[in-house]
Every structure is written in structure tokens, then in C-alpha cells.
Image (cartoon, rainbow, N blue to C red; front, side):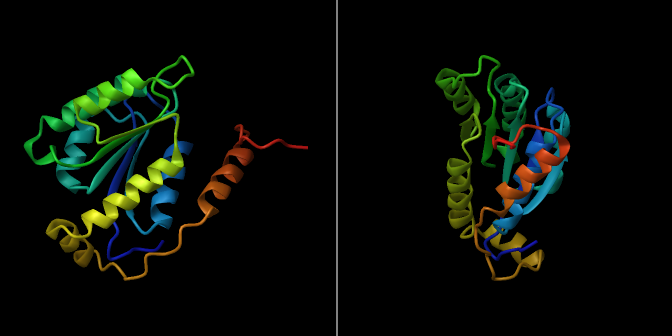
Length: 187
């Protein structure tokens, strides 16, 4: 794992009703390969636990993943709970994956999540947009005293590391091994 002087501490979890884990592992690998520290709380994280962990760990960002199609409902409850804590009102919160069960992007749900306090919503898992969002946070967050202090305390190195497709390939191999669909045809 490569840590960077500009690396963020990102808390990753699944919504309260979402028991999927591979998406969270892939997010963790993606973030770590970009030079960020990750605390992965795993699947089915209730809003109270998420808030408590954020208050304890003081992350630079929170990422909530959804595979089961209840991202809108779980995310809305989670972000509302986080925003009730005065010290968490400015923590960037991203929600990504399936917002609903209809199988189509839902602009109204994404807008409602942003209005409730989500900093970013990546409906249907737009990884390129997610990477750009994280890079932007790291570029701007590295200038804040709190992030710089956390990086210094973590003993971060100056090497940011190159962003490669290794995470995507590793996740695809992991899903293939587990028998999950990879999006690639098997001959």
C-alpha cells in the first residue's frame, strides 16, 4: 500500500440493508492504490454505527456503496444522520452504485441525496467520475491543516503512486474466481 503526503483517510461502507462486500473491497483497493488510507467498515452498516465511527476516526471523506438497489433509501438515512453531528457537517460524503431497483439512473433521487447532504452521487457506479472526485478532494484537502496534520501523524511518504488499471483487473479476477459476473465474456 502506498501512502501519500496528500493521501486522504477515507471511510468506506455499505448501506444498512446492503450485504454485498466485493464492491467495498474493490473501492478499498482503488483508493489505496491512489495513495489513500482506507477504513472499510464492511456491509450492512447502520446509520448510528456509521456516525459513531466517523466521530471516532475523523475521516477526510465517507464513501457509501450500494449494490442491492436500495442506495437511495440507505444513503438518505445515512447522510441525514451524519449531518446531524456538528463536527461532521463538512465531511464529504459520496454515495455510489445502484440507487434504485428499476435498473435506470434516477436524477431525482441523486438530486434529493445531494439536497440532504451528499457531496457527490455516482449513480450506477461511474468509476471515472469517482476517481476524479477523489483526486479533487485530495488536491484541495491536502491544503487544509487537519489533513496535513493527519498525513504527518500517519508517517505518509511523498510518493503518490501511479493510477493504474490494476485494481479493476484484480477485482474482475476476484469476481471471476467467486463465480460472479465480470462483464467479460468467458470462452
